[in-house]
Length: 438
Image (cartoon, rainbow, N blue to C red; front, side):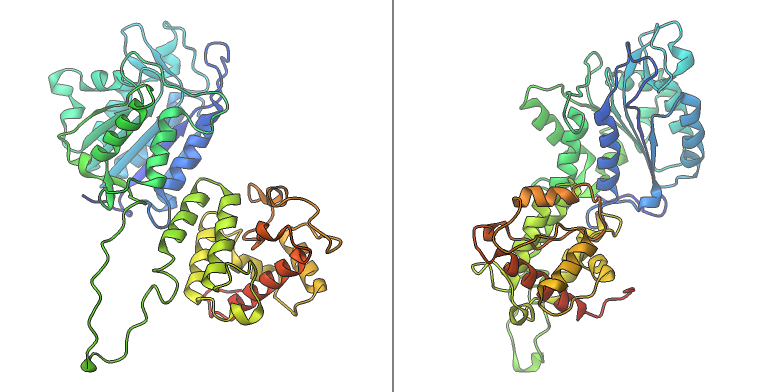
């Protein structure tokens, strides 16, 4: 079991959500989210298997030629793992073969071969690749036909070539689901859930065969179309796209101290990494899903607990001195990684440096971070949910984390407690010696 070699692997993610022929090929808005979600999962700083520069996103590609023009040089230069993912409409040709529909595709059977990509053409290109592992994931109607079509005559059976694996959203004669209003298509949504949340009890690497088993189980339990796979005898089936986020290393037995052992080494737990690992993992998952409200709430709770001020609900300057520096760095790294470094303590520190514990100083901070400046101390103008919605989608650099504790909203001094917490934590963060600080 292993991850792809990051220096010799590539992923090409294709999604077509808008079609010229809207009557026969209606829009699939969730497909656009599929690409973003899958790219984030594959390149996640802790669990992902690929660097961002090795993942190419192709949105609403007009025709097969435009797609193949991008794919061919990548396929020919990949030595370890080549992943190709397609989400969009799929159509059946006159010979009952699967075609992948692009933005300008005309699904009329007689015209389809000229405007859509035959799965056999894609099969030929994959077969030409020198990649040790070739993985094809299809999220489209009738995608299961690709398994039959790509097998072909005995002398052309790409799926019998070592290192080739295909995963499809549906059987050969079933339609893929893209429910209106859902963020992702049904199949890719479940795939992303497994990649982001992981599976407790599974190994550290969630291999393709185990990924398929859980997809089959989870979708089947909801009476949804079942996925299909081919290539179970392939070396690629033991490959993992990501690490398993739910995996936990067995606790190491406590070492027995001896006089000769010397000073006790500083553990990850004492530096804020070990005892808070589960919370940091949960923060990762919230951010990966784009759930900034839950991520922000969890950040506040985590900081309060680390300062031993959970019951008080706020942090004084004295209490902030006990905050583990490693924990603040870990929290900042996660916010930064999921926002192209537009959020996090470091970004906030670059916008404004903390000063004295005064309302005027907090007003300066609020302006810099894009927060609403409250006019009085009598009570919050709006609920926490309304406030945090201002930063949804990362609209303002440095908006998160807010360290706003909604449990304090019932208190008359809520405003003072909030700005005392923010300024205290930021002063503590400013004490850190962080490389690359502007």
